[in-house]
Image (cartoon, rainbow, N blue to C red; front, side, top):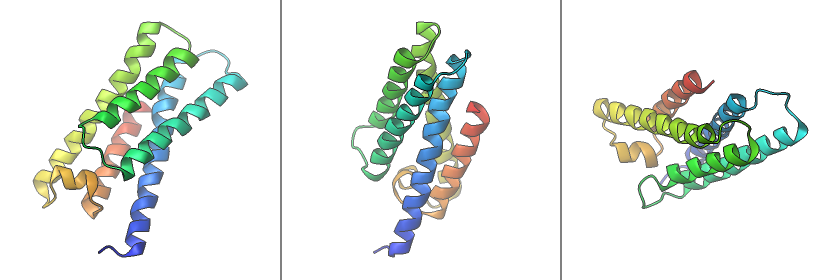
Length: 151
């Protein structure tokens, strides 16, 4: 049985990463497609979709799913809805860029998870589901790599 403070640390780390990722992915689209002067409506839409993506990320972080990559599909759909309805630019680019950014994130995530699982006693599945120092290391590496790519 886990100690309550370890569960709290895990929740704080998970929520912090989810907030950062929400701003990072929606912010990437916002900066990519909103080149003109930004209005109050642009910022309201931005923060609204950051909140929606954060809720989805947090939900799937604490409620594991049984259908592989369903969460990734939902994150991509949220970003596509944001890009299509609230951003300006070529419609094809607004549809394809969320897909590409999520694919890049998935490749980075699985790449680090597989690499870390090769050098540690953790499996890829436990790196995704079970709180451990290796999971935190994996999360930090994935987040830093995503920051380098998307910001």
